[in-house]
Length: 344
Length: 211
Image 1: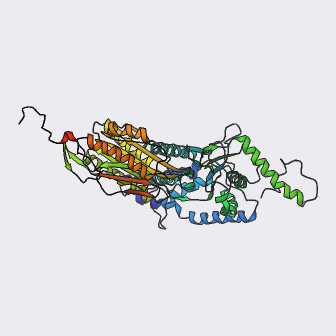
Image 2 (image 1 turned 90 degrees about the vertical axis):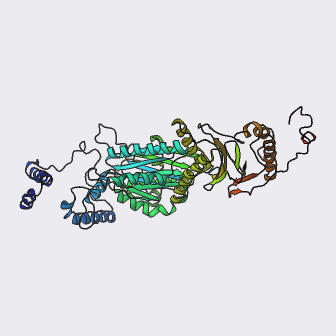
Image 3 (image 1 turned 60 degrees about the vertical axis):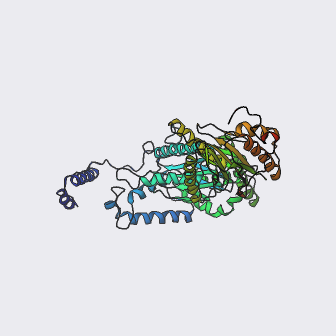
C-alpha cells in the first residue's frame, strides 16, 4: 500500500498533496489514535446514537442482522472510491451518498403516516444528556406542511429554512399554498446538486415531508441522494425497521382512518422503536395537518404534551383490557413499571 | 352553478384610428379562468405568452393540482406591479375571472389588475369607458342569482350605452362565459341600434354660414 502511494507521489503536484495528506491521515490514525473506548460519549454525538442492540423480537432482530451483514460485505471495497462524491465506484455506486444515507440511519426515529385528509408526523425525542433539552426534529414549514427529520440536525435545520422560504415565495406570487409534491421536488433537486459537485457534500439528513394541498394529504420521504417517494406511511432513523414492520401490517386501511386513529398508530410505531423504554409525552413529538370534513383546514401544528399523554394512557388501557380478560387474575394496578409483556 | 361573464368589443386601435375590427381580446387560461384585456395589444400578447408558460408547466406536473383564477390573478398582479416599478409597464387593464371547485364547493372569482399594479376583486369589473358608463348600470341592476339570459341582457344594455357614447367603439361584440365545466367564447355579433332620431336628419339644417 505504501509503495502504491509513493509511486503516485511522482505524478503531478496536486495529486501529490492529496495523496500525501491521505497517507499522513492513515498513518496518524493507526499510530496516534488513543485506546478505543467502547462507550460512545453522547455529548459529542448529540445527533447520533450507539448501535442498536439485538431487538427482542427475533424476527425483527434477524432482519436487522441481515441488513448489517449485507452492508459489511459491500464495505470491504468501499475505501478506494469513497473519497469524494464525484467519484464512481466500479460497481456504479457513489459511496459518499451512501454514507450520507447511513447518517440518516443513525438519527433517532421518525414516523409519518397519512389518510386521505390528514397527515401525521411523529418523532422519538433524544436528549444529548439529562441536563439538556431534547433535539428538535419536527418543524413547521408552512401552514399546510411540515417536516420531521433524522440525521444531522444542523443540515435539517438549514433545509427547513429553505423549505420555508420556498413556501413563502410561492404564497407571495400565487396567493396559494405550495403543493406538497412540488415542495418535495424542490428539496430533492437541492439535495441532488450536492451529489454532483466536487466541492460539496450531500446533506446528511432524511426528511419526511407531510402536507395538505387540494389533492389531499401527502407524505414524502426525501433522502440525501436526491430521491424522493410518496408514502402512505414510513419510518426513518435508528430502529425504524421495527416501526416499518408495524406500519406494513396496517397501512392499507390508513386512507379511511380518522385523525385520532392516525395519531395512535404513529405513537404505536414510535413505541416500537423505543424497544422496551416506556413511551411518554416527554420522549416523543407528534404533529398533524389536515382538512376537516366541512372543508376547513387544520394547519400544521405540534400536539401538546397533555393531549399526547392522554392518548398514550388510553392506548395502554386498551392494550391491558384484553390481557386482563384473558387472565382471570386481578387487574394489574401498576401500569407504569411492568410494561414488558405488552411491548413487542 | 356559477357562470362568469366577459364581454368586449372586437377592436384594436392604432392611436385614435380604429384599425383592426376582428381582434379577440379574451382568452381562456388553464381550465378554470378567462382573461380579457384593454390597452396595448402587443403587451397583452406578451402576457398571454407568460400565461402559456405558466399553464403548461402547471399541466405537466399532472399531480391533481391546478392553477385557479385567484392564483393567476395574483401572479399577474406581481408581474404588472414589478414592471411598473421598473418604469417599464405592460400598458394594459386586465380582467381575470373564473370558477373553480374547491374543498368548500364552487368558488367564483373576478378581479382586475391594471398597468400600475392596482388590483382588486369585485362582482363587476370594467375597463376604460366601461368604468364610467357601465359600472353604474351594473351596480344598480346586478344581483347574486341571475340566470344566463338575464345576465346577457344586462351586459348588452351596458354594451349599447358604450356603443352610443364611446366614440372609439364599433358595433361588433363578443361574449365569453366560464363555469366549472369550462370556458365558452361565443362568436362575434352586433347589437341593434336606432339612429332614426329627428335631429339626425338633415344635420346641417340649422347651421349658419358654413360650407
